[in-house]
Image (cartoon, rainbow, N blue to C red; front, side, top):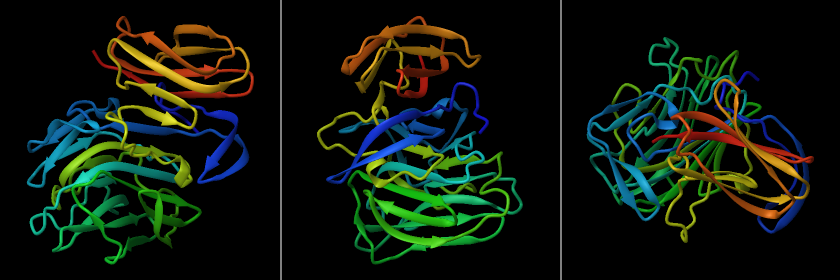
Length: 328
């Protein structure tokens, strides 16, 4: 897979994954690309040019900063296609929808599509609101070969609560999840591509600026493989800030970083090192690490130029890596 310099990461490890209460030994030798965007700014979301429509607001919440959409013309258009040329994917979003019936009954609040694509290939996450101000999920895919809607009005959820929704696609199977629980699945195929490579990402409305969303969006993540529910982002009610990228045993916080970034990992069973490289592949930081089991390492980033970097942890058994954004 061809990765955009400084954005994707290579993740190779041997680990024990714990799902529910069962421990399953899994050997993973995988190359996985993912992008995790903290929706806590109106500029350069995920490091990409962002166009603001209406008047969305960055506000403080019990989960840290998030963007508030008023359901009346607010949208963020990110000039990026995080799906790329993926053949399978997981899309996740952490959000808090308003009880906005009857003004916003069908918000199409995640829409990935090239607006100039005449065939309108797209992937969407949508909500439907009831008169009781409950909501149910609508997952939609339209490829170059077929289309599929996954929706069931009986599967309702409360508004004004932090929620996690996910859609996954692999081997023609499209699935929807709410708070880690699978709701619906069906089959949809594609011929050569799921969406156009030049697609953009609209948050808060359809690409053509209708079906507005009222509520908060906190985090948006796209992974180029199907994740198990135990690997999904989580809403920790004991945590007051979700501004971190977490993938299995590897975490960065805060991200974007300004004066510093904290790197944490565990089960480092052999000597290794931490390395940060810029978009040209130049190493700008390296530090040796002795075996430490769980370790937390704080790096001063005040002297780093603004931009996108790759941060990696190496040992003799695995590589852990992720995208680091510096914003002063």
